[in-house]
Length: 399
Ligand SMILES: *Cc1c(COP(=O)(O)O)cnc(C)c1O
Image (cartoon, rainbow, N blue to C red; front, side):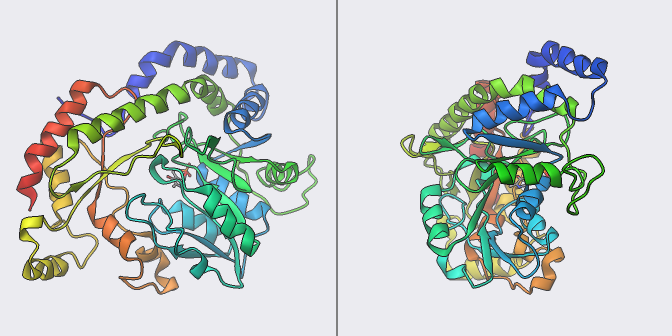
């Protein structure tokens, strides 16, 4: 039995007829840019998010760039975010000329640590960009309190969190702008790149609409420098087929996460991701991310700690118990992924920011310990049992 980290083929079995006719409809219509499918999707997606406006664009990365531009964030501005995320979160901030300021994450939620937020605010801070990482929603009430107090804008990175809610409201409906990705492996995935922004503000929606088409409010009148960043009609047609299923898929992800929790609890050196009290919200479980502690409790001597520290001084080492487990699982037919092995602030591309190792201790530790187990709606109980069996069998061999 071979188990992939995600499966797009199985979803296709269920949807292929509907997708075939949706795609053919677009091809026959001749309207490949804009048009009915786009309008339908934007209305549909705004409603699903609980906001009046949604604008499709080329990718989640573009959604972030367009959001920052729409709020006039640029050179000289600072935007607070976390370093434990996909690179695009910070890359978008840099792309508009602003500076990403990284706040450490909380070890239980892997999300931006709200206790550290205020300390990071300077006179140059313009916005906070929280990431609902792995589908776990950030406590948006608390975050908005801080933002309001300091007059900051809020852009939510919802790329991994379509179908996640905080206190009964969808992510992407709390801040000034929500940014979504439809990259194929996200909870709502297209057949290629795609993204969308969500907002309550009609002016922001209009500004983003224009920025996404060369800053062009009407044909060949360009009032600002923009981008070519549209959602394709073909992608919108695919997403229109998939969006009604999102809730059901998220429910399945939640069941799978619950089963993992039951089957994996109590294993030494393995910590499981925090789940969310249903009173607080809905975790979309785009990823099920466990941590393999670097020292097993019985070997936790000063000497072994020191040795390990020496060995893992480099982020691309593969001496880590986590890396060993990943390799052994792969040999056993279970494919896992590491999100993310290198924190953004220590990426070579951000050398110029001058961050040193040790600056964000929780983020840096997580990067050495996290491992994403397979989670996708079509994962069967047998497959999940196999994953658990392999983890239980192989983990003790990794220390
Ligand atoms: C995927 C992702 C993005 C970027 O989305 P693309 O559609 O791939 O450009 C941004 N932020 C996070 C947290 C992501 O996971």
